[in-house]
Image (cartoon, rainbow, N blue to C red; front, side, top):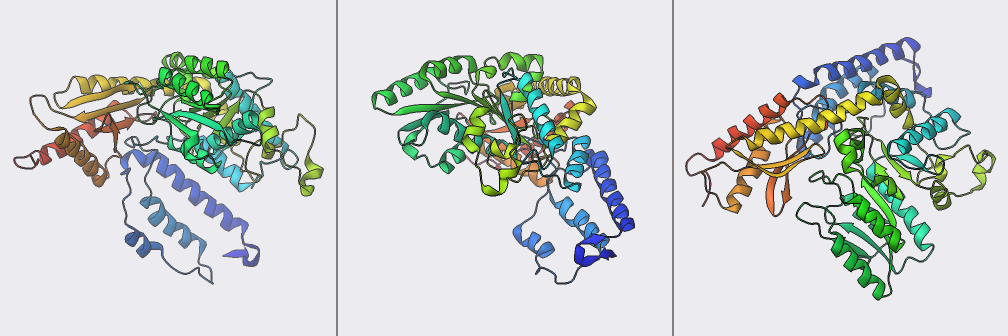
Length: 483
């Protein structure tokens, strides 16, 4: 079985056979996933019954271990790349990037410093520059870093903003975000040690956009009280509705008030590649920092987030440390050590999958895929508006659509409608035929679809809506709905 088990190695022949089996499994998954059930369900007790054991002292046959993983682990994991995975923000992925990740992991490339891998560092520089150009950031002065995801990108951005605007004393610093801002921003703020009274959550307007007048009033009040407004977090594509905040107007406020302008575009910023999305993103180029998640609408596999900054020196000035054991690998100023631009010292080679997929398919293909997603959501909205069963609660925005079951001619209380739509979601998920969950808008329980998978078709959505109607009819049989 092994060439030398003490060295944790298989023979060359065994490695080749093993690798072919893994690749065959991945290819088969990609080619058949449309026919699979997207949702995995399992209780802790069920998972314990499959996997709970002591760490084995003696090894097992490697092929037996692989077969067990394929049969028990992969089948018990929800497929976020499935065409009927509509919830949260799906991860459509692509095969080229999957193989790129396999290469990066297989070669075990350390992507922290230039000396360890100049090619890895160079590809990160190049791909970051591609993104800087896409979003209109200055190419010479701007910079960025790939992270594990939007949460780490937001944390990196806020750490930088605090250093640049507050220095060592942030006791009077105040940060502003809307009630639709992603929860990762609140986590980042807490991690950085800000107190609850230093956080201002500004209500949004009826369209779930940052309420500008309320923001101005809040900033003015804080200044009168001797506090230091230092950072504003806008959102380019909220998770709930896909809404884009008034970026141009917010950028002017930040410039006037000397406030760091961070945009969380983890979900929606990639829409700038489409014609309609670009119009919504006006002002995004004015940000001091921007979070983008390639593992969402740039179709990369998990994990891959990104932070872009207007001035790359702000990153190095925030995160550079000079321990003795790194003194021989500092390099010159053009040779970037990315561990000096973020929190992680040890970093995987994330840039490779972005590089290889863009090189393979070209930006034009990405533009077409994103434009298709936006168009699909608009077609779904048209269908819902033409149906006697459905009510559009918030229109299609950046491929997100919010709706609820509310048939014409039927009278239900608000509580009954909430119950109906919650029941629909629960039954659809329990059927495992689609991943469709609820959110709450204007106090109403609604169904939400995020349609960023380029392999999702209108028929996929229509089939899911028929399934929803089936469960609604079952619930609404005589005496099923409580008065």
